[in-house]
Image (cartoon, rainbow, N blue to C red; front, top):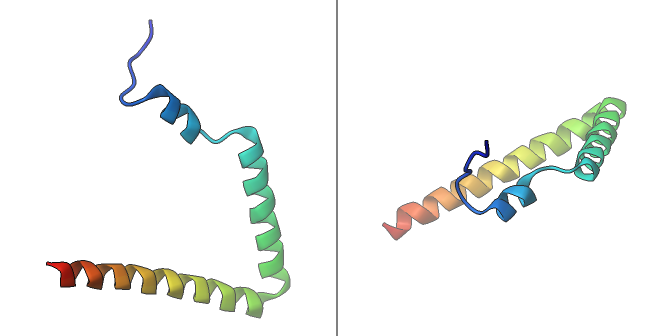
Amino acid sequence: METQLPGNKCSLLRSVMNLLDLIKATIACGVSAFLIYSFPVIGQVLIIGLLSLLWLSYAHRTFVRMLRR
């Protein structure tokens, strides 16, 4: 028995993580964890900087939406 999935089947297949993507993500997470553990001050500065940029981006987008109304 085959179940019907909403949307296009090709787009569903593209969104599935393949093995190569999983390996790359694992290596990237391992390297970043090693660097943060080895250099805690630099790691903290980078993490705080990244989170600050994400927050500023979200705040900017929110203010732009408010001004359009």
